[in-house]
Amino acid sequence: MLLTQEAVRVAVPAMSAYEHLVHFEQYPRFMSGVLACTPANDSSAHLTLDAGGCRVDLDAVLAEVRPGAFVRWESAAMTESFWLEETPDGHTDVAAAVEFDDPRVRLYSEVPEHVLRSRLRMDLKGFKRLCEESGAAH
Image (cartoon, rainbow, N blue to C red; front, side, top):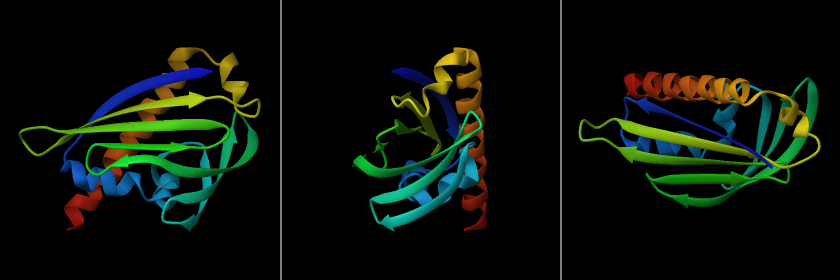
């Protein structure tokens, strides 16, 4: 298993950030490598990923949610967890951890940790942009 962690602060309340994380259809907007997402219902979706140049299709489910505080989704190939903590100024610290555990995405095991961390950092910056642009639109 391969684990990568990173964090970012977003200028929206925790519930706003949480709402973006529980809607799989938004993932292609901020997660590099997510090519497409087809929600099956409120808690599951079919994702198409680019994993090191290989197309990977997987079904993901929201495995654990705590509104405004935590989201974890799981698939046979990977798990991603998000911790949210609202700051006194109404912003939210978002920490993310991704675990890869499937031969189709194990290609990442050949990639240096700093490259995976950089990719997760880029995804979180995209998440920050999505949240803040959506917040400004309200």
